[in-house]
Length: 392
Image (cartoon, rainbow, N blue to C red):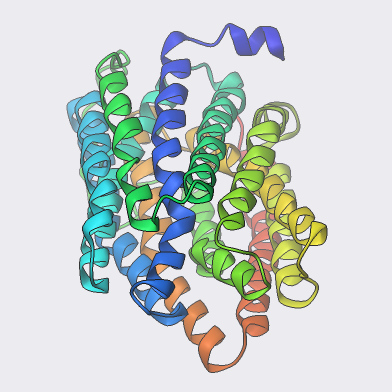
């Protein structure tokens, strides 16, 4: 595996490095937003669900549009550069926020930046590698992305431990944001696929292959129970974890994900994507049930969060590799657009429902509902998206 990893094309490594730097900025502030919302802006889980859900929903249509534009233009780089630039400016501006509507506006801008770059980046990565190495390539990308998610929270913990005010920590996100923008200028577009008349685009899934449509339905079901990760930070705080330790907790999750992303995603090249995704969905269900009924402060909570890192490692790269297997080359950008649209659009109802269940009934019911969606998605994936249809 190591020889194959080293032999991956330059573009694959550069995309991974860009994600590493970007996530060091993004994840430095990500665990702090719910703390800032609750301690400075005096808002609770329901408003957090509204902010995160609306931010993703507003950006959702752009995710599909950007993927379609890649297929039509044959170019990914302009969208990638623009997307990282927008997010790099929006994040540090949170330091100047004094009300939740302004926080919502900046979170929307950050998500728009991600929406513009996500499908073009994934399409460029898929076009840069042979089909039999897609799991390895996407696994490397997720490993480097999650490595950035280790660096960012550790920086946040160091700054908070040194007495830097919470608001000023957000300003430090500008430094990796600028570095990330410079790195994107070195990207090169992949050669376009052989000339084929582009399929007419419709705001439906009719033009996509049936196995791909089924897979998107499974992703939709799982995402309905996959609300914003920020609820995990609120739960950890509720269980007694201090503000300074929450970034460390998230860094531990990202470290586990970074460690296992490459071997698990590469394993999907041999045993099949569906098996890995089912295992990941079941790990998610166990984690959420643990957060509902068995979580307690101390090493047990860190061990439980480590399981969440395993879920991330088993799914993040594999789900994109599976989509690349199912999508025709001339519709790859559109397919990634639909995947990102599905995940983004459903985050709003998922987060609103999770926040409502938490505040109106109990945190246990909210976490239990998410676990149930994951189990149902695993069953449907096994029965509906046959392993024989997922590899070429």
